[in-house]
Image 1: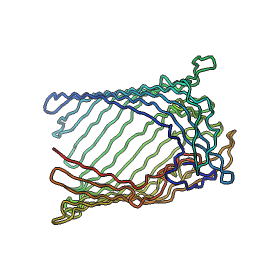
Image 2: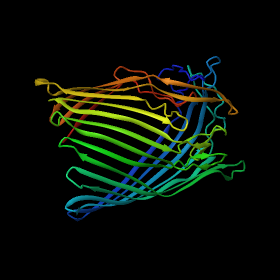
Image 3: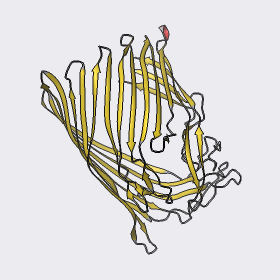
Image 4: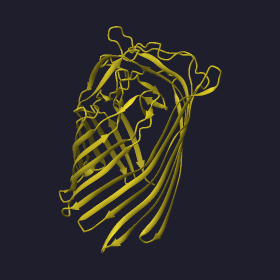
Amino acid sequence: MPRYNDGSDIGLPRNTSLTQPWSTGFTQNSELFAALEHRLNPNWRAKLNVTRTSSDYDGTTAFGYGALDRETGTGVTWNGGGHYLYKNTQTVVDASLSGNFSLLGRTHELVLGVDRQSVESFWNVGYSSDPSGVVPIDVFNPGSWQPAAAGPVSRRYNPWGQKQLGGYGVLRLHPTDRLHVILGGRYAKYKFNQVYESMDAAGNWELASGSRFSEPGKFSPYGGVIYDLNGQWSAYLSYASILKPQALSKSGPPPGDSLAPVKGKSYEAGLKGELMEGKLNATFSVFHVARTGTAVLDTRYPSNHEEWSGNCCYLPQGRVTSRGFDVEVGGELRPGWQASAGYTYVSTRDETEGAPFSSITPRHLLKLSTAYTLPGELSAWRVGTSAHIQSKHYVKDTLYDADWNPVRSYDFTQGGYAVWNAMLQYKVDPRWTVTLNINNLFDKTYYQSVGYASGSNYYGSPRSAMLTLRGTF
């Protein structure tokens, strides 16, 4: 859904659809996989896994885009009208050796492996002769849009792909009966190649843009320590490094060069244990994540977005941190009654700017669930409920005019909300069970995600029901 150009909610019904009946897509997916395992001896085994997946897509598009002017009712227009042909093939090969060995009178475990991922894709696009983004939409009564049929392919994105090659290892040491140490890491290389070509007036293909990115081999370590306090409780501490390529985000001036990967570190510590003589499991953890280099928009240049070939222009962000804690308790409160509760608190901050960073992430999140089997002659029936409760989140945005000059900055908020679900189950016999699930039981209207004034605001799903018959035979 779009919003008003001051960021406020239009309040469109959830069944509003800013698209057209002829906007359809057909996708065909297939997967082929094989696994081979060889036991070298009682303690060691070798594994080889190969997976190949492919996806083909053929579709047309129509969508509304733009912020709505409250006074004039204009600003949202029809976009799309293109015909898209897409194919993606991914091949993953993973070979590993795992086993246990003795050292200083103790038994330990080791895993060593190598893997390779290859993704190859192409996009062919044909556009309508009618220009996109011109025909206005009355968002309260969208009506029909019938542009001229999409013409022959005039853009192609080929080759488009990425390759990763890496090796990894995990060592689990047990110095004492209570102390356990985990050491691991991955060494990987990353290559990305994306070319965008367009057809000129004479019918010749010419290079429009391209993104070629190669990340030299980098080592990403991780590790952890677990100490068993007693037979019911353990304390742990873990560390992991972060390395995330962002080849499609480019630095200015246009056409730009790919930014360096996001780098960072993640720390977590906590307790895990049992309550009520093992009937309940409980966890408590605190975490701290710090990263640098995340792409943020460079306002010195007009925003330029070329689908599947790179976006310009961006700057690498300074240090961003996420801190918080997580608590979860779950298990059997009494015979036939299971319940769980979890609460997460998180605070994100841009340390360079000294201000909050991710306003989209809710600061508070509470999850509850319970299920109860009725007693006696009604024991074939089982009832349950669950809830997702979160605090408000908001988005900051800037509105630009046609020449990419900033007009105004604003923020808009999705207030805190709770979504409840219900379950009713009947056990027909020991082999067959019928279950009715009702999601969003009270039909709560809310935005599951908020984006910008011009779009990317998605309503949460309305109330829905699913009836399932499950059996074994």
